[in-house]
Image (cartoon, rainbow, N blue to C red; front, side, top):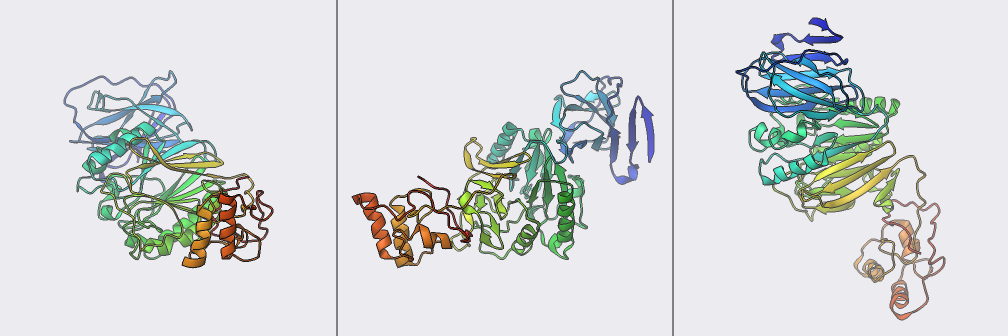
Length: 504
């Protein structure tokens, strides 16, 4: 590998036999002479877009319509530093990898072409490097199943442009048109120039040569598989490939186990896995056998993952915290404190035709299903993660949070609150009657023994519903003590409980 040095700048170029010129630049601030304009520059076909944006590095990629010399001009956005210009070689595809950047810093860049350095893109772009590993705050936008190239995809892309996230995670199915520029790079052009794209492989992306387009850090897998991981501030992300060839053999699961163990040893606070096929869904794919259900939940339980985000079903779904197939700590909703299960999200409303809910699916851990175009916004800090599902009109469709570093709240039950919504109303005696005459389960032991046992007789009977109706509408005696104070159920297992709090 050849190398040269000038004014503190080191540059290396891979051999041309690699199929593309890759300029590796160590971005110590140095002064170079600005390049003058020229004629005959090729036209920009794709990009620029960001890859592998981390604490001290980024890769900037663009594609021209013809081979020719290219370069990139970089400087810190809010400082008076003179720009540095990096050579990008003379191929059609240009990849400039910048290393030695400052953490959590804004940089401005512009791509150039031709021997004299004409601006190839007239706009100067800005990206921000990641906070130091283990600290800081940042935002992530998530969208999936977007590659329709129609008005709905462009509406979601416009939303992301307004959100201005640090990262853009795509849950797969980048393109349904047969043209990846039409399906991904053109609709999200402005987003990709300033927010680093981290994709996973969808079933419609199965045969695309992703290594020609995406250059994530820590990439693993042979053949067409696509899985990798990266650290960003206090979070560790794993891109998981749910296509059959990548699931076979166990190499990916082995990688994830070793990878998460290393991230925890390094002190990372959040573990987030994203993939295409959802382990849990009540949408169009719900009734079908899905390999992801056999592989991902056991990994999530074993490794205590915080979030699993997927696409594939064209809608939005949020599952309650789930471990070993059972809902845990649902009564925290919507502000979870160290929940004892993984929260699963489906975000497949990026533009392609929407799918509805399937009644035959298992709804036992479902919190919310929405047939809406949307994107997710994750606001991540050291101790708190907030997730919002947002429509293209900027309506917040759903929001919840997970907090770490605080004591878990005590589980408390309001006597008479049979439907666990935190208040006493007509729905509570109706729930009791549904249980007695229609066989509808009440839920966890605490609800059977306390919430629905209005008169504290030791069992749930018809007189509990009558007593509650009498109290609510005829001024009869209140539920048994300690009403209106909440009851602490002691050692009762709160698995599956959906109590959201007490109303006093």
